[in-house]
Image 1 (tube, rainbow, N blue to C red):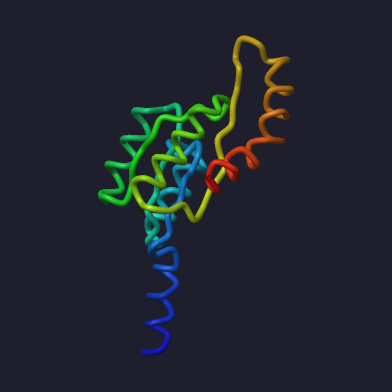
Image 2: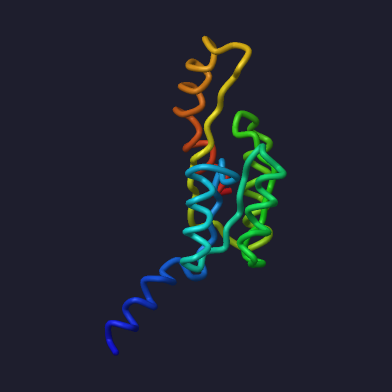
Length: 131
C-alpha cells in the first residue's frame, strides 16, 4: 500500500503550482504543458500561435489550462503573460522559458536577435515575475 501512495504523490507533484510556459503551443513546450498539467499544475501557455495554443488548452480538458498571446521579443507581451498568470491564479511558481524565434526574411539577423534575447529572456521574465 505504501508504494501506491508514493506513485500517487509522484503523479501529482506539481499540485497547486502555477506554470507559465513560453512556446507552449507546440513541440517541447506543448509536451511540457501536457506533462505539467498531468502532474497537477495550473498551466498558462504563452505563444504567438494562438489557434494551436487554444487547441492545446481545450485538449487538456481542464480549467487549469489557459492561453495568452505572447511574442517573447516584445517586452509588453511578456509583462502581460506574467500578469495574466498571476491575476488568474494568484501566483507564479514555474517559468519554463521555451519559446524560440526564427526571422525568415533576415536569417543572418536571427542569430544575433536570438543571442540577444536568450541573454536577457530569463532575466526579463524573472523580473516581471517578481513584480
